[in-house]
Image: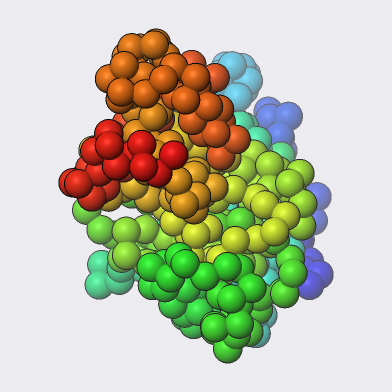
Length: 507
């Protein structure tokens, strides 16, 4: 929406060319024309110490009667970041112009009555403010038409000629529009929400130092847009909560691990239709988790939803027992790897700031039941906690190694179900588990392990080979500790009557 900058922005150069300062004589002009937002007629030196930045200081005739008063006034005006100092024409001296040059402040002289100049300048500023008020009303109407947070921020940015606008939470940029920020930008923050609100966000503009906009005008536009930002935020969060209901329901079904992917889809067809599940397309589950000692913050779910849009698109994020869950389409293994990389690089620092970790399920071409994917993601997130906030772990890189992250035997058993599915489904799993456990108990000695089980060495070796066929990583040294832990936990769940003689019968 185009706007006449000359109507809303007053500066020294413009008023010298065609405004109330046209009749003054420049004694010193700074290279950059100063903004003008107010004017004050000063008759006492102390009054200058109260002026605001971007003010034209007009010295009264009496004030300009002594050269030392003009020099002192220049110093005070420079300290207060005044736009310019105006003195009576008969009162200035070359020393005052030299001081203005050294300080870097504009000094003007008027042949007329300083009070009349101050009144004329005040009238111009008042007229400009009237235009600004009308402009702010128009901006308010414009942003009120926007229904999404992104649209509101884009409208505000357009009104400020592409200035970078962002919504932030504790310094984290959740969403942004306009020019990317630069270190030299002037940062103008405005709080969103009040003391009675659970929202603790900041609407921030980053204005280039060379911008034509008054910083006060920028702040005013942000303040006018704040109600629209808050309304769009609350609306989007409400819609996101509604869309996330099927995802939350799926998380509650994670005990249904016995069914295949096809059986799960058939049993829960209505729920998957609500989720927007595309039949035959592989998905990856992503689980976010906070530290056990972290106090719950009501707005954290909304914050995480906005952050996740940067990497998961519009996949609904549900707040579930023990964290947050989202299910993201991943057409192939490359897409799954890229998803994990995006979460680590784009969200890792933000997750660290929020005290969160993330875990991802494995990608498989023949997608398992959703319940298994959810469990894998949750276990990965729980494993990531031992590394610290900001950690992102995929179950594919953990495998049986996830077992070492847990003391809870049930959790270790669940790792076995997920990481060693062929072993757990094998009818001779108890024989194989006992063989592997004995082998590892005796530090990899087949002879000693066979003796402890009253088996022939070749018999035990055959069972160990069978374990390898079932996916047990006996030849990967870094995973042997995890395998040993898993076999010990699984042995505890085996029937007590399972003795060496029983195992011989199962050969």
